[in-house]
Length: 252
Image (cartoon, rainbow, N blue to C red; front, side, top):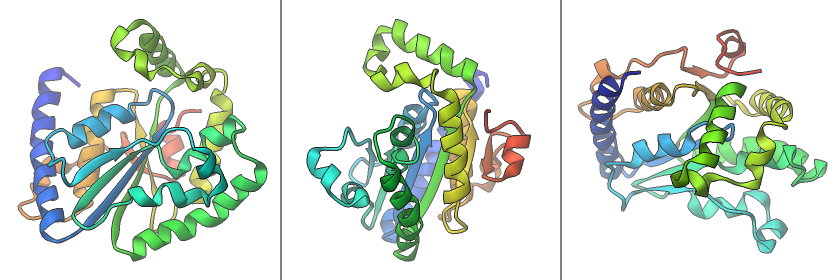
């Protein structure tokens, strides 16, 4: 996507996001969006564009660090519960409880028993969110192996991106197949009718940002909605299904 077109579309979509936030505040809505994906897939960038012009009093990004010793002794979902939205709030998780099905599983940070417990409980946890009236979306950003390699290299050479480098990054490429297997299992077991996964082809960062925002706004209601702006590319954002593999949205 050319820069000029991207800037114009993003500006128009951010106006729509402001309209949506006004609706959230006026109607006491609760909104939770989680972003998962490959390392370097662009979660930070999408969240930044989501939040850029929204009122900071009612919107925030949550990116939890390494679990404390107390966290490790608590119910797994407990550390996430305090960060869930209250009325009038929009919360965006930069990685979420699905760490257990991804990074923790691949890096052996959890036991088989803990993983099994997670899969047994996550459906009920998300159903409770649904029943409590939370507007809930799950996005998974996927990129190709070649694109990940380029982005990891960029992190190492760009002095402004040094803070993004982590020990997990070093394992990303060599663990590619393990992450793919964990991702596919997660999709099959946790894409629920009331909380489906939406897969995003994020090889082009600008296309991914624009189409995720369009997809989200097209699926929520708010006053003075400009429907013409919100037609998203279904080859960029796709509700999880076998067709996502056929379209190449999910990288092998």
